[in-house]
Length: 342
Image (cartoon, rainbow, N blue to C red; front, side, top):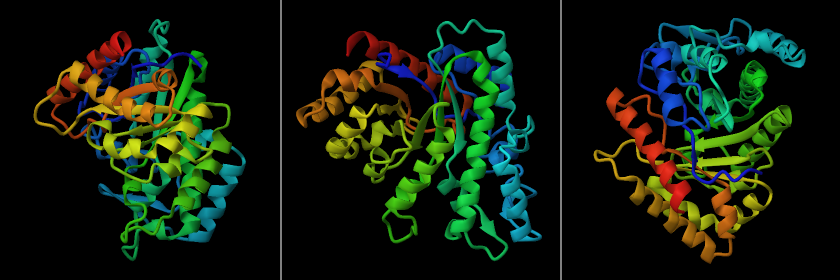
């Protein structure tokens, strides 16, 4: 694998309402691993759940609220699986009204010299977060219905495959992130999810995506990181290194095995919620302190560095526009500093 040390990417969302302007920011500040920008301030349809909801079984958008409200649940699931089994990717397409940044990004790449691009990054909301945010007609989260969770996971994977098919002609390696902030609740009294639920689901999804991309997982809080290191379905773990690095490095033994089997760690080192922005040197030093801990616990430093990506700690969609631009600029500066100095 190519030495990735310090290459930067983004999580997905930006606060702009102009898709073309958002894409220009991405290409300026994360040229090695650019991503299509999700634009929740442009339209409610670009929200984290609604953006990926088209043609998934039983989902209805009423105003700005997404609900599971099927007219005939069994029939809608049957029709869904007919399309799924037929591998009908166009049925699961994300339309321009739901992802203006995706279409602007695709068009811009067609006009761009891609020699500096190492990977193209795509993303979709993960099935557990997706199902935790949608209620049925009785007001219950559909995460409690295992049949629906399985169907939504398959549908979201088809939306991932549609993206991969759309971007494959650029001839670049691709990364597909599942965004799963709700995994912070695993093991708590408020979550019905188990460690095995996550491992089993992502192992199945990896089979559907096999050979087409590297599969990443973004979780912006603390969780049981061993369920990701031990999953056969995850190639890249993206965590909030600015706030949770000290807890993450406690999983050194799991991380050692993860790296040995080809895993990559994406350190979400640039803060998104802090009132004052630190400088590139201090952020790089923070990563180095985490690396030092892992090296002391028996992980090879060279391996850690060559499998080290960086990103913001979370998406930028809720920030003021200038704050988001400043965050991307700091990300770029930190990437350059790490590549030269770590």
